[in-house]
Every structure is written in C-alpha cells, then in structure tokens.
Image 1 (spheres, rainbow, N blue to C red):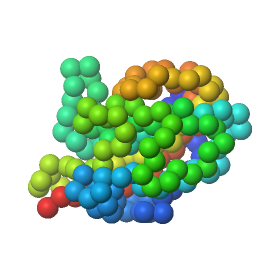
Image 2: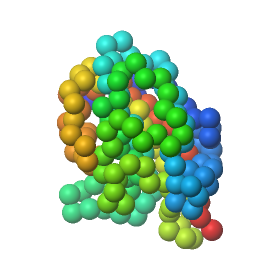
Image 3: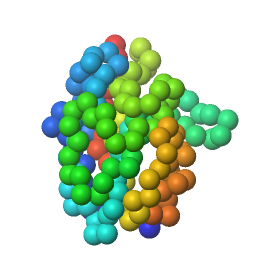
Length: 159
C-alpha cells in the first residue's frame, strides 16, 4: 500500500483535530501522552503503531530526516481500539529527546505555533519488533506490512 491515508481514524478526548494540545500533554506540563481512540481499522490488521512527529521543528539531520519525533510506540495488537492517557505499555521507540517513550510538545520560545502529527499505522504482520527503534527505523521495518494509516493533528505554541 505504501504511505497513503486510509479510512482508519485516530481521535483524542484531550483535543480535536486541528486544535490546541492542552499543556498537560506538553513538556511544560505533566508531559504525558493524550488518550487516543482508533476506529475503522482495516480488515487484516494484526498490529498497530503510533507516532508523534513535529514537522515544523527546524531540524534536518545528516541522514536527511526532518522535524522532531516526540513518540514512537509499536507492537500494539491490531484489536486495540484505545490507548489511555499516559500510555507506557507496548514497545516504546526512541524519540528525538534521546529517550524512549512519550516526550510532549516543547517548541522553542517565540517559534510560533507548531503542528504535531499523531499517526496511527495498521500492519498486516504482527512480527515483534525490538524496543528502541527510531521513527525512521520503524518506518523502514513496517513499510512492506502497512495496510492503513491516518493522523490526528494538534497544535502547540510557547510564548
């Protein structure tokens, strides 16, 4: 399938698509992941992954990647339809803070509003992946198994 949007949906009780992410879920607050709900998962889904990426972050690496990765979560069974606030289970990958797990929005002061893309990825393979993968490593691993994806976008701005 490649990387194209599907009918699957991702939503949060903490913010609406295109809306502001509450400070509780940022580096200025409790820094815990928002609750997420997943619906319309494609038939044949055996596993899910969730990532959060800020494409507005002014970072480009020597490897050609861009933006800032806040969360990489995978090895989620395909029948999971929700993740609670502060989810710490499943397999955590490495974020661009250099840690595993969720690291909330924290754009540079005065940098304006950033968009945070929370992606849900549906896979037709439930092969166990090792912990600590970066977003880019995860995408290389799962691309052949990707059968659906979609996103929820939240915004955040520091004054």
